[in-house]
Every structure is written in C-alpha cells, then in structure tokens.
Image (cartoon, rainbow, N blue to C red; front, side, top):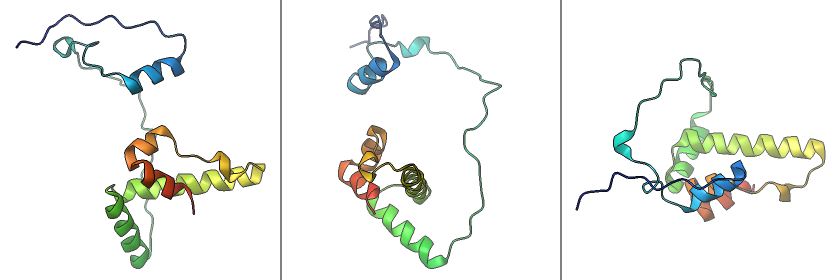
Length: 123
C-alpha cells in the first residue's frame, strides 16, 4: 500500500507551549512528507556545548559507569544530569528556593525513564 504524499495541514498554535504540547502527543508523519524534505545548512550556528578535560579518580569513574549502565544511558549523559541537578540545587539554595521546586523535566523523564529520573533528582 503506497504512502500518501499529501500532508495534513498544521493547526495554528497560540503559543510555543501549545505547539510543544501538541507535538508531545502527536506523530509527525501525517503532517510532513519526507519525500519533500530538504537539507538545511546553518553556517553561523555555534555549538552550545564545550569540550572539557576532567580528571576523575578511577574508582569514581567506575561507579559512575556502573550507575549509567544500570540506567541504560551513556555515563557522560548521566554525569551531565548529575552536574546540572547539583548546580541547580546550589543556585536555588543561594536564592532561598526549596528543593521541591526541582522536579525532573519531561525530557529527562522520557530519556531516563520515569522512575530513573525521579531517583536522579534526589540525593
């Protein structure tokens, strides 16, 4: 059965949040025809990350890799989550915001799994 090439029209969104919510609950395939896709070039786009060299004790790195393996994520990604959470917690404590305000994002919940994300926020 051949796939139809006519795309379904996109709804009008009142806000970026509304659009984000829509795409979290809908499949993109009825709205886009992959046969009409074109490559995009962004010559002025700069990376939003920076590579660093970080020396860690061997035992700490081994423990980090074990934790990451149990969560089925790359250890570098888990380290970034841990660092981001700790920096956020320290920043919030300086500003007087409670830890309750630190909840996992939908993205982290999807990526790490609901129970896994909730475990990484605490501690």
